[in-house]
Length: 420
Image (cartoon, one colour):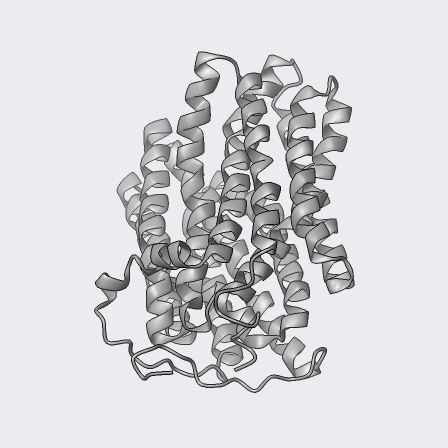
């Protein structure tokens, strides 16, 4: 391979189940779990504080300030990861977050304003956007191919705990008048995360420069999807579910609950049911690892997600809807880690960062489009009709998954990173 191509220095691969490998994975996921918990605390805290300071308009400004820089930065985050390595990116972005959160918490002790929240949210969004693709490249560099599915299932379990613990904590801190304390809590989580990342990324080498300017490589993720049919179909499968999930489980759910006379409390019940199902399913995937065939997890559970999403809107009672929502979480807890694992295995090692940035961008970028498209459809027809259309779109995920599994990776043998 020419020196013009980015390539990490070889990482010695330990045998599957090696204690050293899983100790590193444990530290990494613990640090990321604490970081995700802090992210959830931060988001809830700034939204609640914005609502108290300026109402709905302030909430809109803060939400846009976090989401737009995050989506834009994610495009460059994968390129920067491939150019400088995940270690350098994560240590620097986390350091910036620690500095910003530390300064803003001191300011918030005496002054609280919407513009302070907007400034902090924009910096947080930008740093998270730059760092997210690097997080996505670490597990393939740490574990062997046959253990990657288990590692991703454990990572999904870790991510499911963040909203369960972080949302009430962030809301409580702001409700009791302690925005500065909430920011300090998030800052402390970043410190712990950085210490964990600093240790687990030591064996990862530094890539060599590809020569082209970074801004010219900003579209490398799109070029990769265009050139690699397997990655393209894997991306489309994830995109279908991201688009189908975004509107029903966010703005539509409260509307449906109120229309049926079940009250806003029913929303919390259903979200809890989904989270519990996904958490148990991810735990099952972590224990069984590759014993569940990948087509079952990826294609079968993808079809199960679409079917459960359709059944949710058709069942007549809240109890039945809760049961279907648990099933939706179970299917999602299997499909999500399987999709990420296949995507990581198929991505070229020298472009793993831009590949993961596109997958992450799918989840973040799908929400605004879904809100606009299906929200408009709901206003023209009804929320029930729009929900059914979302479920129909979700059936595109298993169809794309079948097509993806029939294509051999363009980059050669699967999981090229840890087998260098």
